Length: 259
Image 1 (cartoon, one colour):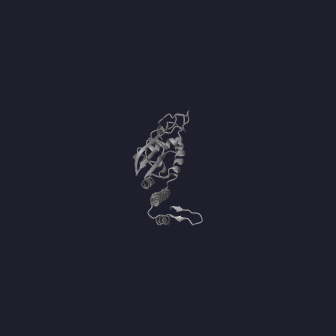
Image 2 (tube, helix red, strand yellow; image 1 turned 45 degrees about the vertical axis):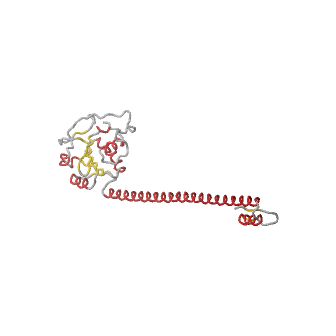
Image 3 (cartoon, one colour; image 1 turned 45 degrees about the horizontal axis):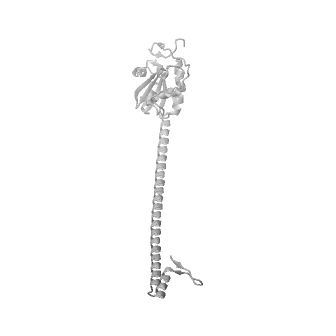
């Protein structure tokens, strides 16, 4: 707004000033020039005000748009948080269900009659067919005990072959130790002796975990294309396979000749 100052008087705004010029000067050329200048100044101020108003409107719209984005982001975060919470609740419920069915521990079942109920009750099962006098079965026990606690999604069992003649015949268990890997109640794969585990007594738990992961009988998060070797001792003793008959049942053991 154009403001005119004069000595000893209050400042005047542009409208009274323009009117004053027109009234005081009449129609003289000089007064007309001054009046035109005042009018031009007035128009410039009006235009400037319009520009400022438009700029303020644009800025306001931009701010509103950013606020809307922030609100949408907050909504997305809230939805993600809710989905994550629901997933955690579902996973916890599933874990409790597994534990109630005997998962999370490495257990021995007393007879082959119990085997069918245990397998029917769980989607993924690892069953170790063993014999007490076979040294390498104890090695397998150690690793399976560790994996049973880690992989709660899978049931880990052991069964003495001498207590399960029908089952060992049905599953064609001819070698001790043997792991029968079952999915949905059906045998899908076998780990026979230590041959798939580096053919050594000193294989790592990670190696057995990898082998079970290859059979999809556990949820394996590593690289299935390459077995782990970091835990393997550089001078591990390789197993010599010497087949022996156990009490005439026809099972072979993965034992050294001098064991």
